[in-house]
Amino acid sequence: MLPHGYEQPAAIVLLLGGVLACFAGYRLFRIVLGIYGFILGAMIASSVVGVSNTTGMLLTAIIGGLVGSVVLVFAWIVGVSLVGAGIGVLVAHVVWTQVGRGDPPAIVVIAVAVAGAIGAMFVQKYVIVVGTAFGGAWTIVLAAANAFPAVKETLTRGASDTEVWIFYPTSASNMRWAPIAWVGLGILGTAIQLSTTAGRKRK
Image (cartoon, rainbow, N blue to C red; front, side):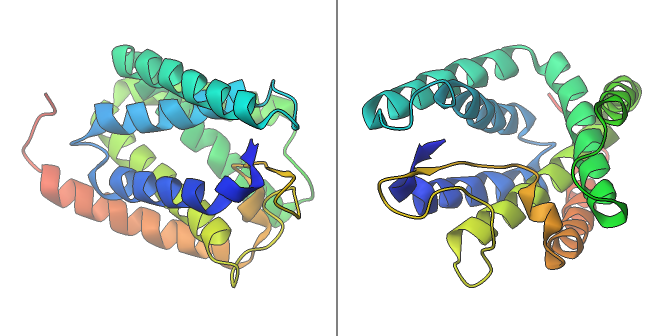
């Protein structure tokens, strides 16, 4: 979470990171890992600070983001597994919201995460391409929904500049347009990445 006034700047950062991941995730995989490590670390670290402590919230977000970025960059094999697990969990949430109510059961989330992680190690290139394309696409959807009031629905908690902005990675799945935009961008990103990496090996 961040002070509410940082919502749009954070959404712009998410948008840029999402575009990079969606369309160049394989070629720039370590950079993408660094970006998403920073986002994840910042989210986790800032959530332990009281909502009234603005300075502490920002400092812990930065520190947690740097730690998360370093961890994923230097453990990219683990990162590959996390990409597979993450895309599995994301698909489970999106599908579940279309056929049921609320969040999927924990056992389903764990099962798809494990399956995604195992599968990622067998077909690394294609999991990285598809995972970063669809993960980046979802980040773009979330960023757009937060940056533009015209398409924004209940994605964040906080109604004034004195409250906090809380980022919910799966909340946009309740929007009718979000899954369509996600799939469309994901397919486009996958096609572009495959066409630009054909015959190449990632260094």
